[in-house]
Image (cartoon, rainbow, N blue to C red):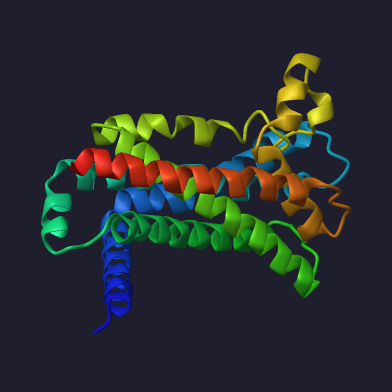
Length: 254
């Protein structure tokens, strides 16, 4: 068997392992999958009537909730990586010549899978309460591409946080920024309604172009430069996170 085939087999085994771990950790799975739905329902039915967006509030808020899903999933990724680094599992895997890419990549793929399940559930519930997205297949494909790039970048960044942290509790804390960023953005209220000192941050932070891209693509409205800005942010972040994860992994196992 060639070295390339062996590496591919190890990667598939690590992905299967991480997906199984996600299924067994029921509390974390329910949190990452159901909590975004609950938050969407709270915003739509408790606050939606008081927030003016120019359209039905559920139509406005769904793209932001899709991005929020990733933040909750990111915490689970960081905790899983830290747990592996502290419970002796990495030493066992290293004795079987399993490399960093396979180990960390397995956690990343499992994270993306969890987030995709959460995304589908949020969309299904949103359609049930009045969200009516565009039907053009190309727009759906473009929205899926933007969201997938975002998921990959955030998942790799969370893996890096997990390698940086020394305890699972600390890893969960490191991902707070990822979970917090959707709030001071265009996710739940129009940026124009914010104070001027906050508006500048909300318009230029990395989450806003993803939300604006999803909103425009799913609702068949102009997207402007949002997809290009989102791609620039998250291709750069993905590259940094992958390199950082490799460096931190080598330092932790040295």
